[in-house]
Image 1: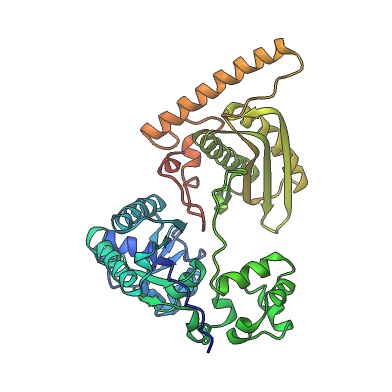
Image 2: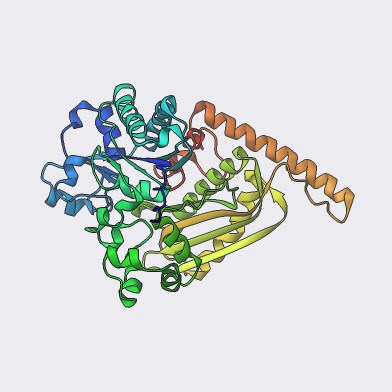
Length: 426
């Protein structure tokens, strides 16, 4: 009688912090504890929640809910303006606490972390003990409001699914033989990687429930995705790890949706300069230079304008980049007929490490003069960076009056990129 293959080892522990931004605010202010809280980018009913406390979620308030609607759904809702520097500081404390217990293998986002377990910790009772110690350590050493849901499974993807099975403050072990029964009640869009736009493709292929998705072949999903993304999803769903790789910067940029008072072209130009100043400072801090600057704008009625300039050599100084922006601004504004600007994006492309040698110009005597000028501009730009780090963001600025920009230029947290502390002074 043939022996069945051994069950795959429990190789991953995945941790998902519960209502992270709102929990941090409740930790910092005892008056918010036990009350419905929505974290917002600005104090306005026209904006959306970027996080909701567990108490607010019981009323249906969640990330993306319009605040006007949220107030109707949840009487007594308390709005708190986001403090992203605070969330990064707590993130660092949380990482430090977790690593007292076990090394972190991957940081998925500001509120998600994965641990790749060694042979001893792959034993279920040992993995569960580790998870419980991490949970207790977070509440004791970071804050009593800081809770998390943990999933333990053979692969990182399945461990992430497991962390979603019991919220808040859950702990779930998901073996491969538990699939797909443990998630059979989910909708297809409950699975990470399947969004609203992808769902109709599954329906067209006759896949409407999780059981059908589980039975589909790698080739089926390849066809639905229209490429290797389907093969990758099939492997992840069936417990295979695809690995993760360190990446280097390919671009650095910032975008911003303007408040109504900044949407006239002269005021919008100030926003563009502030965003470029921030990107340039980050460029220098990460020790890169750029060969290309792109500027994009969107009007209130969704018209677009964009332009870019390629530099003769890679630079990192704010002075040169501001001169380039001054060339691009009238170009994009002509494209949108100088209408009100709702959104601006500034991007530095074609990045080169400062360790890479610069290509020499055709005429050495001119190259020497240019290099000397660029070197002085880079040194002065770095001095400006240091002043802002020491004395506060926009203590010194180039191309705009600092007081005109402070109201909109703060650092925000992207879904997958966590700002470094230095960015909050850039």
